Length: 371
Image 1 (cartoon, rainbow, N blue to C red):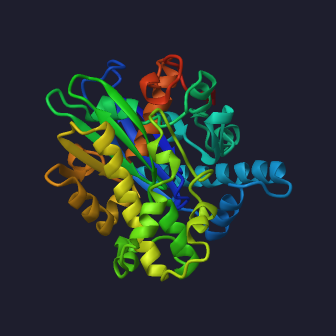
Image 2 (cartoon, helix red, strand yellow):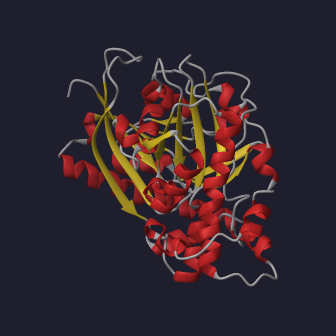
């Protein structure tokens, strides 16, 4: 290979599994003329029991210190399995990989209290796989007064910025986040609110499915306007950036508070949750990104045609498409980003954007577990 090989591991708030990407970077310079090449991708689903255990850790539980530590070991073993499957498919030796960028699994994100917690035991992962692991990308930014999220806008800038067009990149995972890429080179970004998270929770509760494929069940319902208006009154939506969020706020308890003593049909609630994601995104774009010429979607929510159709209707004549058009598939943008973040760390290059996270300055992100 002419360039450096990195692996990116991403397991997000949707809790569906781990995305793995094998990425080649041009090693002639850190500011590459050529974009990174995605050589191979792989997905390993979380077993349903593991997903349930991780969800339980989102809130205080009995003996949670030990449970969290043991769960970190379990995740490291699953990550190692995913990496081994990718290496086996590509017939590439671990010795050929410079490093793995591992996001880990977020179980708490409380920047207002000065911490975020991603588990996955990167030290164990390095031992299991025989490759240097870079992890813990968020805590340094929080230590510098930032939100620790979103971190991908710096990567978006490297790959997706255009000299003559203002672009927005929207990742719709469990949480939805927006990156604004101005043609002038200026960048900002923030979490707009729930993406798939609330809908997935509702679908699991009522259909015992992990998600609503293509929005089919939600599409059989109708928007409950009073419920939508009530949910959109959540104070988070009107907070100015920088801001970030997660399951600590948008969870089943949050939703149930709006449904208390109501007798709505479950499929109508599902339809309203799709509308909540679409409207909160549209409001955020209108307020902070009104000058964008093009909008590119990525993440699992980009596959939900009901959601994308509603968002397109709200946006009017704005160009709305996916990052497939920019060369990276919608499922793999974040995993590639963490390969990039690992490379930045190893080369002692900053990777946060203070104008995005609110940190006091640019910082080198990540902790290195050398093999």
